[in-house]
Image (cartoon, rainbow, N blue to C red; front, side, top):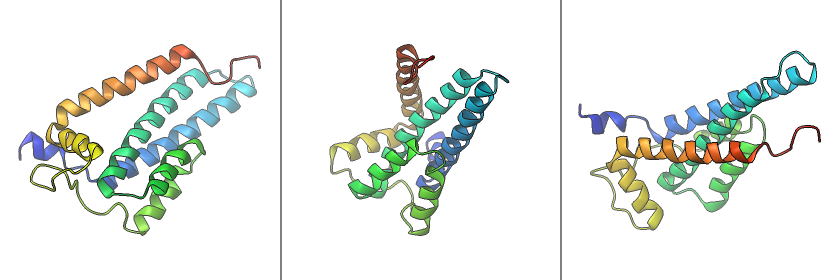
Length: 160
């Protein structure tokens, strides 16, 4: 099995499910950290918040990637993105769309698959044809965005 084929083994369903669950788990960690801080037990909000923020961004990228592959309606893809801001909502969303068969199939724009027709499909086809390079580039982009957001600070400054 080539590294190209091996890298494509994660299905749209598996990838989306993994990040939907991870996003919910990091919500739990962030909420627990907020409770610990409120009870003067420990202040690990920056760690939990940072981890949640990183997984939140990864979930967003994954949602858009799967949205393009599965040809979801705009409303469905936007709902998937918006539900990430609601604690634990990504898991029921994933379960609902999976039940409806909206995560079925493989990467349709992978090598040997369909020809891309739109700009987002061309981007996805390139990514699927250059999997390892794309993973490195996407991780770097998410990390740069994450670091920029950390530099900007929390949405609500301390003491307010």
